[in-house]
Image 1 (cartoon, rainbow, N blue to C red):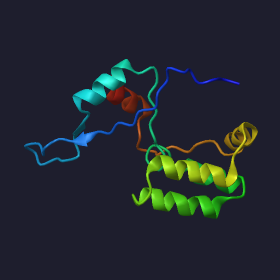
Image 2: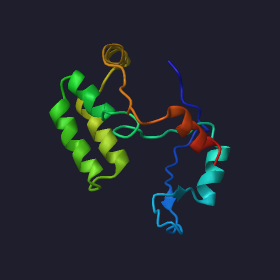
Image 3: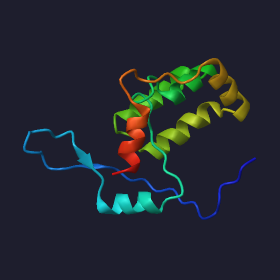
Length: 131
């Protein structure tokens, strides 16, 4: 079993919107200098791509596969509505069904992730790492 290095700290960072461009496009987002520095110095970076790059909300699908779909989906809805902090909602959802590594692997074997058709994964990689 892999152990998490003691030096690996969890840090949450967000991308804040810039002022509207001259073309009126407000969807252009740029990470802050602090976030860029954090990314450059990090050993690993994780992104939540459920219901964006991936078609499904992964934890809901895994919970359904393990028999706890409805209860977990209710927590997901609360978390996505902003009424519960992400970390609290994730912990609560996982505690409802406590998936084993074997269950996760079985789930992935039987139901591999489905990706949005219009998403270019190579383009996302370039956008994230060559800012």
